[in-house]
Length: 277
Image (cartoon, rainbow, N blue to C red; front, side, top):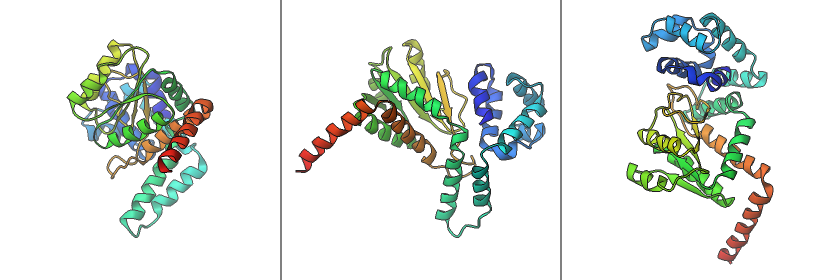
C-alpha cells in the first residue's frame, strides 16, 4: 500500500498531527483516495493546511498530488482482489457470522497490499540470529505472543513473553542485552508499558519491530513498523490479519532455515511419540 510505504520511507519527518491523518488514510484506503482536504482534516478538527503539510513531508507538492497517487494506487491494485472485495461488500448478509466472515476475507485479501514477503524475510533473519527473541503484547495481543512463542520454541529459538503486569514485564525484560531482538504487537493505541520496553531497547542497542494495524504514533520509534489494517476502524476487529502474518513468519523461518526448523520438529515428533506410547 502506497501510504504505508511512504511512511516507512519518510516516517522520521512526520509530526503527531501527520500521523493522525495517516491513520485515517490507512483505515479508509478506498474512501480517502477520493476525499478533499477538508473531508480528511475536518473530523480531526484540523485546518486543511494540515493535509498540505503532510503531503509535502511525504514528497508531494500538495494534497491533490498525494490524493491522485493514493487513487492510482488503490485503483491499480490487484484486479481480482478488488473485485472480490466489491462483491463481498455488496452482498447481503443473513447473519452476524456471515458478515464477520465477509469482513475477515476482505481484510485478508488486502493483506499483501500492506505487508511484503521481503519484510517477513528480514524479520525472520533477525529472529533466527537473535540470542533471545522478546515478544510483547497486552490484552488480546497476548494471544499472538503465546502463539508465536510456541512456534519459535518448536524451532529451537529461545523466546521470552513480555505479557502481564508492568512488574512481570520488568522482571522478564531485565536480562535483555545487545544481540537480542524485540517483536511487539500493538493495536489501536500505544500500550504504556511498550514505551518503557522501547526505551530499554534503545539503551541496549536492540533491534525492534512493531506489528500493528494503523498505529503509527509510536515513541520511542521502533526500527521497523509492519502495519496491516484489520478492517474498518469503526467495525469489530479480530486478530485474523496479525495471526496470518505470524503464520507467514513461521513458514518463512522454516523455508529459509529448513535444517534447523525441520530438524527440531522431527525431534519433537520423536518425543511426542515417546510420551504418547
